[in-house]
Amino acid sequence: MKTFAFVNLSVDSGYYGVNHGIAYLVPVVRRHSFEVALLNIVDEISAEDFRRRIERLSPAVVAFSCTSLQVKYLKKYSEAIEKCPDTLLVAGGVGPTLEPERILLETSVDGVAIGEGETPLDLLLQTIKEGGDHFRTRGFYWKRDGTIEKTEIPPFISDLSQLDHPDYSVFEKNVVQPASSLNVIISRGCPHSCNYCSNKATRSAYPSAKGYFRVPPVEHAMGLLGDLVRQYPGTAYIDFEDDLLIARKQWFLSFASEYRRRIGLPYRVAVRTECLDEDIVEALKGSGCDVVFMGLESGNETFRKKVLNRHHSNEEMVEKAKMIKRAGIKLFTFNVFGFPFETEKNLQETVKLNKRIESDCGACSFFYPLPGTELHRMCKKHNLLKSEEAGGVPSNFNERPVIRMTPAHEKKVIRAQKQLLSYFYWQDLKYEHGRFCSTHSWPRAAVNLVRLVGPYLLKKVSSPYKKNSLYRRVMDSKLRLALWRLLFRRAHRPGSRN
Ligand code: B12
Ligand code: SF4
Image (cartoon, helix red, strand yellow):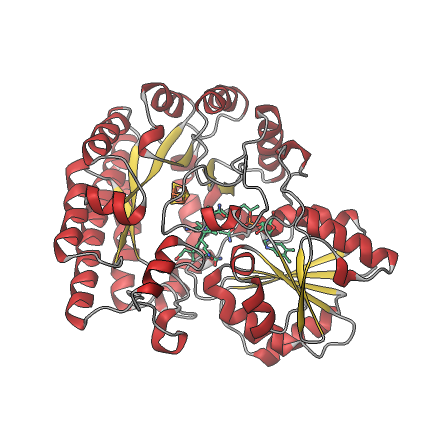
């Protein structure tokens, strides 16, 4: 049996979980009777080491999956194996989809899949099986003798029930199910078009983007979730990583009622201000949602409208935040600092709006101009992009500002980010510890305090992104996880979160 090797590039991203894209593609590969292997690269390894690992597998196809921030590693690792005989190198994912030509010219891959991979990969494996000319497979851009050949892009699959359930078995169990929770994604895309997000550019890769935002039939979603929960016994929590699962109101209301009846596990999900109303909040609460993620992004209304293409007002955000908090759901906000044309006042407005809506926790990333987005074009026009060598391409969004700015402004951006992070830290501590104390004895509550304060102190002395840092060694240690599971298993039982 021939081997098909996926390579998940996630180097220094601060993220060690599954790649849902690969999980959705595994059944396609298995259908064609290939043996599936996975190299999950979360810490940088040498090119030599990578080549050795691939040679051991001796695969017919090596399939890289990555975001734009990981393209630099795609270059390094594809070059390492370009001379492997009889191995076809392909790449896919958001990064390659948005810059296929650049990737074919600057890396050693033979082909780049455009958009969602189920159909292109199916066509490619069929062609390989039949001994046909794979350079003609639709859904890919190919490099042959140094020139790029573009093929027709097949439409995306509009009925998601036609997709096989994702298969996470190629990932280690503790990656799929960290601390009793499962990360899942059941929809595709988002109906909105924020200027800093890849969504619009990704759907524009198709000749027609109409209907790109898709949710599966509720029955299919229940089957998928039920299967996963059965495959991973001990699952006590679901983390929905969909862009905007609540975007279609009627669908979400019936999803929530079935979810409550048939799955019944507490969960968290992303929301958007405009989509929230009393019905949705009631459905969220009633079906077990205990945390929502809401994009606040910037605290200045005009800036949000003009630069970010987000059109809701601060008042609306305050009102919706109140609804969430009244329902007893934890409010987590996403914030970005270091946008182009952002002033010191804007930075402080972001901090203030979080305080005003009393976010219980949140993330504060630095703006990164993703290729193909409106803000990338704006940065290019105003000469704000830094070269890769000058630090213009980080591995994640959280370490430092990325676009050109004066050193004085950069300091302010970093200071504002730290200020908000510290606010979130104390808010979160208050929230989590308060909730814990109400259901547990004081000795457990004391250990819980160490659990909450420990990572904060560790982050002060070591980096969460670097291999073998103290933070990583402690946080990734199996002993720590086992200990917390033992001590806190009651805290993770369904229903015990509220
Ligand atoms: C869930 C999610 C996460 C999760 C899990 C990520 C993961 N690797 O699965 C978390 C929260 C951890 C996360 C983290 C990050 N994310 Co994220 N995330 C998403 C989100 C919302 C959904 C991704 C998803 O699972 N989609 C569903 C699956 C089925 O689709 P898919 O992954 O695109 O895979 C399909 C195709 O791309 C293709 N495909 C993929 N790989 C391959 C390989 C081959 C060979 C082929 C043929 C096809 C193929 O086929 C797949 C099936 O159809 C997207 C937004 C979006 N709508 O895409 C952002 C998104 C992918 N994330 C993004 C970013 C930037 C990040 C971070 C860098 C943020 C950070 N920490 O600073 C990290 C980096 C993670 C990493 N591994 O590098 C950006 C990427 C932008 C870009 N241009 O690269 C996106 C697009 C959001 C945005 N703002 O625009 N993310
Ligand atoms: S709402 Fe979120 S996922 Fe949708 S386009 Fe805006 S940032 Fe992207």
